[in-house]
Structures are given as C-alpha cells and as structure tokens.
Image: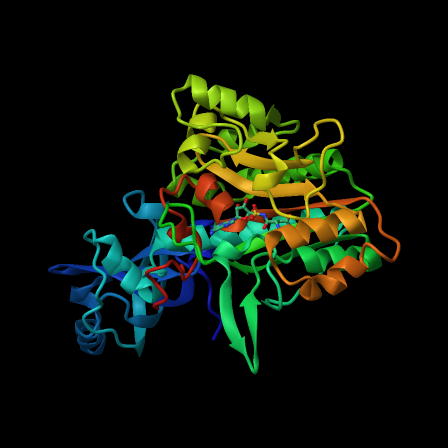
Length: 433
Ligand code: NSS
C-alpha cells in the first residue's frame, strides 16, 4: 500500500476525485447526524475527512464508534475540493482501519494550565503548535549546519562528561564518576579550542548543563549549545561571523518556514530585517544608559534579564555589548589592550527585549596569564594541564562563541517562555517526563 501525506493533498498534488491512502491520528471528530467529520493529523498537517452515514457500510459505522481523539487510523478516500474545509480540501472516506485505539486522551482542545501541560509534555508535543516549534527548531539547526559548511568549518563532537568547569563553579552539575568526581559540561569551548589545532575552524551542537537555580523565562538546566571556535580569528572577526550566522538562519527560516511562522504571527519581514552589521555598544555605555533609565547598576555588575530587556526592548535588530570588565567574565577571555581592564568579548542581545543569545570572545593565548587566571578561579590547576598545553605548543590567536539554541528559537517565534523551545525541558523543578 502506498501512503501519501496530508501536505501532498493540501498542496494540490492530486486531482479532484482521485483516491488517496493516508494514515495518522484523529485530531478531532464531529458527529452531525448523517455527516461524520474526522480531522486527521499527520506529521505534515491537518485534513478534514467525512463520512456520509446514509451510504456507508455498517461495518465502517461500527468502527467509527470506537474512534476518539488520538486514535491511530489508516484510511482511504476520494479527494474533494471544498472551500469550507480548512486547507480547501476534504476526503470522502471509503474505508478506514483502526491501527491503535486511544481512550480518555487527557489533553482536550480546551485550555489547560501550564503545569498540567508540562506533566503531559510527551503528549502535548503532538499539538500542531508544538509540532511547528519542532519544525522550526530543526530548520534552525539545519541552516546553521549548512552555514558552517559553506564557511569551511568542520563539525566536531566533544564530550559531555568532563573533569573541569568552564563558566564558573556556581552552575556546575557534579556527579560521581567511578571513584572520582566529574561534571556535566557547561560548554564545549575548551575542547573546541583543542580541536582548532587540528581543523582550524570547528563547530558543534551539543547539550550544555547549568545548575541555574534562577527560575526565569530564559533558563534551562540542560540546553542545546551551538558553539564555534576559529583559529587566526580576532574578536572582531568572531563578531562578523556571528552576524553572518544569525542573519543566515533568519533569512532561511523566513523563506522556508512561512507556514510555521504564521502560527506564531511572525511575519517573514521581521526576520529579513536581521542583516549585518549589528549595532554595538560598550559595556560602559550600557551601564550609563541603564543608569539614565533609573536602574540601580554600577560598573562591575553583570546584567540580568531586566537590564537586557531595557537595553533591547525598543530595538528591531540585535545588539552587541562589548568590553565587559574582565573580573565578571570567564578566565579564558583575553584582555583588550586598547581598553585595559576589559575583555575582548561580546555578548549578542536579541531585540524586542529578548536579551542574550550569544557569548563570545577572543581567547587568552599567553601561558602565564592563563595560569594566573585559572588560579584566581580556585580550581585545581592539574585539571587544566591539557588545556594549558594548547598554549605551549604552537599557540595562535583564536576566538569563539556559544549560542543558546532555545534562546534563538524563543525570539524567532516570540515564545514567552524558553520551555516550549525544547521537546523535554529541564528546569530546577522539572525532570519529568
Ligand atoms: O555562558 S555563555 O555566555 N558562554 C559560554 O558558555 C562560552 N564558553 C561559549 C563559547 O565561547 N564557546 O553561554 C553562551 C550562551 C548564552 O549566551 C545563552 O544563549 C546560552 O548559552 N545559555 C543558556 N541557555 C539556556 N539556559 C541556560 N541556563 C543558559 N546559559 C547560557
């Protein structure tokens, strides 16, 4: 048996009157006496089907009595154009088979509380809205991969179990690793730095873990981290690469995902506006601006969601903040020789108040300086012996960055919370399902 997808029907690949075989899940049913409507759902969309009871075999009528929301079915029917049907097509069912029954499906079409939905995340993912998010997520990673390949990068696969921290001890997940302690990685950066000496330009997409206790709309404890590292790149080159990457993804998604974007009332023009160069502001200027807006911040404070929102809420394109004070940034960042005390770094903030999506910097290449910076973190230097080797054997200027995939998706689709941007969100209070 050859099965078609709903999208094939909606795109008009068949002529009116042709017969198709479809399979999927029952999205909803409506019994109007002689007419029985069944909206079928598959991976590609929704389609209305109908049974006219008066000219239908009793056997089929028996079957439809067993059908309820999320019953899995295969069916065969004739294509009819119908203006009134969503999508403009309807199928008149000739035959139908039940593949898997569904009883008392807990998610109805009425609205549920978010905790209830999250407890049923394994089922919630079937909804058309969640499917659209998953499709966009796949597009973003696909076009990122395409971008990096075109730019001459090699994709690599670093480990998630590590002996040391990258981004500061406060957010480390510690675990027993046989007879010693290990950590879940906070970032693959240190391994990417090792790999550039083999491949020059590398990138990866991998989970990063942060024991963030802060319950905010934009923090997960496990998130997908898109990271790149480039030999012979300055921080300036690094920022140019980020602009290109983010603009490329926006353009491709705007062109290729129009239908999914509509679900979120996102017009493609909003994404097509994202083009290099992005606006820039030094950390010091950002502090001044926040103070003028009445924020109680001083030089040396890190920005939280509120500050980032204030800085970007009136913007329509992303903003780089550069030159953060060295002491509030990670040990591996290089000092800016033109602005002592500040790092050759940039955080990229998304517009419309969404805030940070990328953290990037040029890396410290000097062995002694790096040893001192690691010692200041209080971490045992032995754990970084291999990392320090990279500064001993042919060290070169290099830079890199990390982009939070869910943060980007959240902004792309104007989601109010990061938890919808990942299939099974992990937060301090949730590790189920
Ligand atoms: O801590 S970062 O700012 N930077 C790094 O981890 C560098 N080691 C990356 C690198 O240069 N290779 O994190 C980078 C991004 C940040 O801008 C966010 O978009 C995202 O990772 N991020 C998160 N997303 C979701 N949830 C949490 N908790 C989170 N933490 C960071």
